Image (cartoon, rainbow, N blue to C red):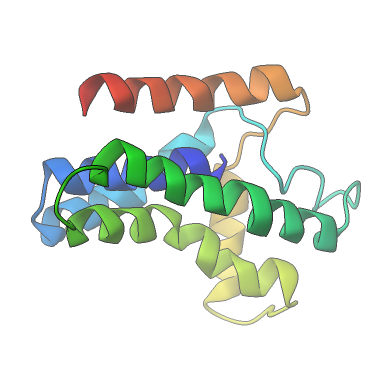
Amino acid sequence: MLSIAHGPTGSFIASKIPNPLISIPLILASHYLEDRIPHWDVGQGLTKKKKSKKAAFFEELFFDFPLSLVLVYFLFQFGKPFDYHVWMGWFFGLLPDFLEFPHLFLGAKVSPFKELARFHTWCHRSTPNRFWGLLPQFLVILTLILFR
């Protein structure tokens, strides 16, 4: 899924369950569970060489990643005092993607990146259709808005 789904999901969980001993494992599990839902993301086609790593990196860096920050800010921080739980949740919601970065983009085919990437790839259920692939992510964000 896109960062605009994973980041806010992590923030939502952390805002509802501020104890990091409980929230962090739930946030990490939510990342992998969300990736099991068929979806479209900027890394679509990387493993089959249909998209360049450079193109995917710039889509992530300049579109998806900043939008996740903006979305978290407006959903959980706007008009409120700073809440580090919200931002910790955002970080841990994206941590599996951050940990996969060295393997995918830097060619770090060493432990633990190799094993984490293998597990993450197993979790991914992608669809090439942008509409059907973005719809579940839109529904995740809508659900977060309704229950925040």
